[in-house]
Each structure stands twice: as C-alpha cells, then as structure tokens.
Length: 481
Image (cartoon, rainbow, N blue to C red):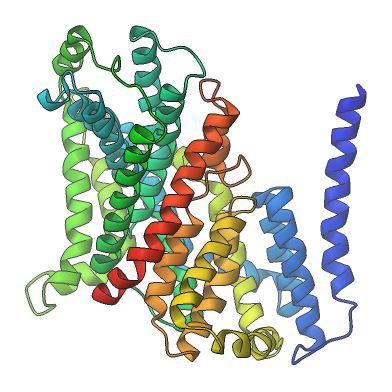
C-alpha cells in the first residue's frame, strides 16, 4: 500500500474520530443558559453530525444521527419512524421518482431540441446562448437538472469542436459552468421539486407558516431571471467573451429538426402539464368549484403517485409499460433522502422544551438582532449564509439556520416569508468552490473549465445574487407576501 493511500485511509479514520469526540465530548460539558443535561447530549449529537455531514458523508452519518438521537431522546424505532413518516421526505421521494420517470421518457431531449432549433438563434450566438440556458432551465424545472447538464454538455463540446474553441478557453468554460448553475437553480424555483419542499419545511419548523405556491414561483422566477440576465451581460461586456464563432451548423440544426417526437415524449410532456396544473389550480381557484377540493386533498403525494401509476399502466407501441417504477428509483438522491430522514428527529430534539437549546439561543441572540434594522438583518443573514454555503452543505445550513432565523424574525415583527426567500436563494447559489455542493464539484471537475474560470463563473453568480437580493429581494417580497 502506497504512502498516499495510507495517509488517505488514516485521515478518513481521524475525521470519524473527531466526529465521535464531538458527539460524546460536548455531552460531558456542564449545561449553560437554559440547556438541560439532555440538551447537552442532543447538542453534542447535532454538532458532531454537522461536522460529519460536511467532511465525511451525508448517508451513513445520517443513519448514525437517527440512531444516536433515538437512543438519547426516546427510542430508535420512533426516531426512524419520525423521519420516514415526515411528509417532506415522502414528497421528495415521490417527486424524485416522477422526475426519473420523465427523464426515461426522454422529455429532456425534446426540450433541448426545441430550444436549439428556433430560427431566432441562427447566426446570433448570444441568443443561442440564451436558448441553451432556457433549455437547461426547462429541463431542470420539469425533469432532472443533472440530466439537463450532461445533455447540454454533450452538445456544447460538439459545438466547441466545430467552432474551433480550445480546451480551457473562457468562452466554453463560461458555458460549461452556466449549464450546471442554471438547471440547478431552475429546479429550486419550482415549489414541487424535492429541494424546495425540503427547504420550505424549515420555514414551517421555525414559524409554523407555509408559503403558497404562486408567490413562491413568481419570486424565484423573477429573481433568477434578473440574476442570469445580469451574469450574461457581465460576461459579455466586462469579461469580454467572444462568442462570434459559436453557432449551430445547418447540418446539426437539420439533424435536430428531423428527430421525430416519440409517443413517449408526448406522454411525458402531457404528464408535466398535468402535474403543474393540478398542483397550481387549488391555489388559484376557489375550493367550492367542482374537483378543486379533490385536487387540494391529493396534493403533491397524491398527484405524483397517480401520474406514476398511470405511466406504468400505459403501454408503448411494443406493448411494454412506458416506465418501470423500480428503475425510476435510480433517479432518487438517496443521500438527500436520508438527510431529510435524519433532520426530522434532530429538529424535534433541538426544538424540544426538555432540551432548552432554542430558548438559550433566543436568549443570547435576540438582544443583538433587536438593535439593528430588519433590512440589515435580512441582508446580513443572507450574505453570511451564502458565503458559508461555499464551504459547507447547503441543506445542512438551511436545516440549522432557517428555523432559528425565521423564528427570530417573527419575534422582531418582521416578515419571515421575505427572510426565508432571501436565505433560500442565497444558500442555494452554492457553486463558488468544489466543496459548495455536488453541482459545484461537478462544474470544477470538468476538464474544459480551468480552475480560474470555474471560480469566476461561481463568483459572478454569487456576487450578482447577493446584489439582486439586497436591491430587489426585499421590495419584491413586500409585494408578494
């Protein structure tokens, strides 16, 4: 075994030891504030697991967290039951399965081909870039952001070769990075996507409130559109990208136009429309209208499940089922699902009056926040968490800070919806470093985008996001919430 491998192995063991030291060491510290001895044990588990999530693994650390909290607070079976019975976990699971089903129906190819073959893009490289980003956004919103990224990467590299762009150039590097960022952010704009469901649960944990789908969608689409338009303008006029050679050849356009729309793709498109319409209508129309109360009762779980069942029952031209639900499970981000399962019992333990943790945090922090304006509070909290997410796990940061900060916001007579939307947007712009998120690692790892260009793309998106939130996020929130 080489020295490098040994060092890597021992370092991994050392990180595990640190996690266990935090879990058990903090529990031995004398209680302070209103925290009880039980609260110190829970605090030790939380801090140790938080460290483990950041430097080890989200999956097995989440399983350990459930066992530890269950043993400490109630019983292990109850802890697992709390996590898996959580409606957020179930909604994320069903919508991830539906996303996998739509991906298998090749709806991503349909969206991409349509965007790239419009006559408006011919000979207009910046409009072609816009259509690329729109294609990525549509795929990320309606199907799979990862699938959209890889699909667009394939087309981009083919175009780079045809247009004689060299590996590592800033033009293709910018495009490679943006087709990672845009689909990921677009998926966060849709209130029915697993990530949005997960983060919305943090607001509910802190305040008992929930955001309606329509204002959530309008806020995210507005802010995201302004961000990406601003980033593209910055790239064109400040970074001076030269996309004059960037175009789709007539042969490539003809090939894409000649690809037939399959029966499966048509069904997938109809399924997407049904999914959105059935979930949005109860928030627009009165419940007294026939069928609207039924749709509201079905919710995300019922609608997702019904569409999956329908797609399984339907047959293609060969007489086979359109989808295989078992195969759709490959699209489920199980590390995220287990993280959701673990956060439910941990959150209950942190908020419990028997631990005294939240009461102590409020006791020490409320006087500080009371002495600053609400706008400074909103902007400052967003900037701090947006920077922290570049070196940490965004979902973990959301789980830790959003319930606490929105609860503080209510006590200060502020609008918790605005704070939540700003934190949600800032935390999920996690692309500056490889450690920021799985998408950040994906972008930085691509051989066509050198390290400097990757940091520039991530930095531009982060800086513009914070500026847009500071200038537009609060007034837009006041209009919508």
